Image 1 (cartoon, protein in one colour):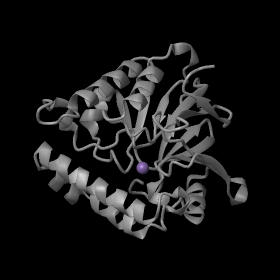
Image 2 (cartoon, helix red, strand yellow):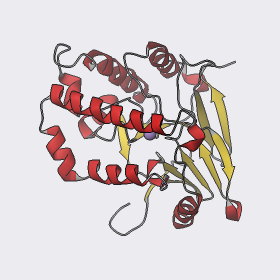
Image 3 (cartoon, helix red, strand yellow):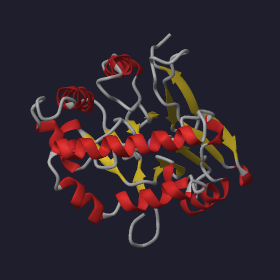
Image 4 (cartoon, helix red, strand yellow):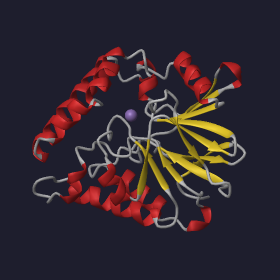
Length: 272
Ligand code: MN
């Protein structure tokens, strides 16, 4: 949100027909099938492409600072994989614009990495304004109000002070910190059991408040890994993106396409 208390807005060029929206790929070298699906999808011929790609967070499993892109693999074993991701994104960015909103895993992805990937950074949330047809985009974690521990953690790690302190450490120290934060979050998930329905979900009241403020009928978000379309009061809707896990049985991953008429459609990763 900017200083005036209004959400950030992005005006869509009038000639655009459709945009593709994805989130929660959690890219990491340790999950090559998902990474390969992403590379293949990025390299698809231009024919089936939308006019832009919107990535709503958690593109990467973890992001410990933009300087990873220049780190030797001895210092940071993940660096060559992340460079490959950046190269693949920047190749697509040569033909269509790519917008990136940070998630809770990759909130440290900053201007330098965005530039290397050919991505434009977006605030969370941002209103897409398509000739007056409006749609609100968010990662979604800020809406999961029932998880008060997480919201406290989120405020802490999103503060300038925490980030400056974290980024001042050498890469191997940051890697270790990120690993322990992830282990903490996994342990909390185990406490709640593996039943995803018990984890906090986007709060309907807060979602409605956001949609009214955005003057938009539709919210698109990720984060919860529970793809669905929820009807809300006042004729509004909450669309949840799928995460990508090509090693799961059955494999998960799709793309949500929003067209100029406000229609939403889930597309498989491979054209039929
Ligand atoms: Mn997330």
